[in-house]
Image (tube, rainbow, N blue to C red; front, side, top):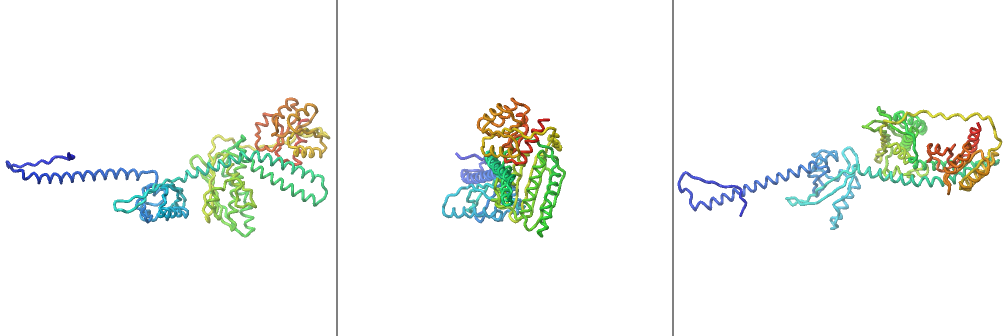
Length: 543
């Protein structure tokens, strides 16, 4: 039986008005009416369904659009207009390819070529959109080609804006790279510092005794290169400093940025003017809350950014520095009008040892800056277009609990009331070259030096003799430097113990106090530094 849509009731005032002959006609009328009613109901259902799906698409969180075979927009949903920065009226009828960068246009062209060859291609791919304001947005695409009621081929595109996701992935990758470098840096730096200690120590010993001017000049060159190498190693060690507890203080960001501008003035004003080029420095400081961190480190970051901006503008230009606050973060933006940064360079710019100036730069400046800002709980990002300069944006969380920084005053050494012609020193180090150079340096100034190749031998020598001071390495087989220090202090609390180590930058004050360590010198050490520290430490203990 067919579906019942209703009843058809007919009546007449005349008796016997309808006959059997009328029934075929009435059936035709009823069939026609039922067909019309059914079509009407179906149309209503279609419209309701269409409205429902239109509401879903219009309210979708992803961009949805329909493009024809000519790549022109036939439909865009509101989210699509938000992503691209154009209105629906501006987009309809325009070519989607005109809103893509060159690499993305090549992706579409390659897909067309493969499709024509009968190659099955994935409906999922990535493109880069260029917004109305010039900003690049990364997008994941899901595309399906269908035939409409008129037989025309159209492509339905669902576009997901993944720009922020990409940034987070890049930051995570960068953090992981720096973490890996940090783990490696400590051991590598220690080995280099031991080698440099032997090179620098022996060089300075020769400088102390050699008389020939030409030989002295050669030795000074070696000394300079060794000291420069030591600075590079120290910068490498900075990647491990996050493991050390460090006091952070409440910082006035605006004052620090102003200091950095003033400190770099000889470069961006005086030096540029002497070369016949002009660099304009523009600043805009808004009222912002304090942050927590190290003033010297933040100043180093800003200074490094300014120097990079100067190098990016060999023909002159403008550097603009502004500070502002958004919610619970302070922002520092440093922009230049230089040559800009290529995308492949921008992605690697914070990596250790990456540099576009291999013969004039260690490649640690920006990665060092990245590490400093991360330790302060902040972020640093860079935006750039080739030929349109670059903008570095630093964000730092506002501080609510940081201490006020006070000026640390180093006390003057106590007056010397008793002098010793000779100081008896015990040197403990597992590196023969380091033991030798320390012994020779201290013997050179008439001290008496005994050496031990490890902690056990050192403790035995100390137990058997009398020493005015003990110098020990940290990382040794068997007993560590900390173990040596504790044992010495148990036997003779008044005897000063100093640690001379390649791990120096990783040792915190709390650890030194706990072990009762009197002083610490990082390798590679300086001739005068060793001699003066030993003399002053012994003299102060004799008071």
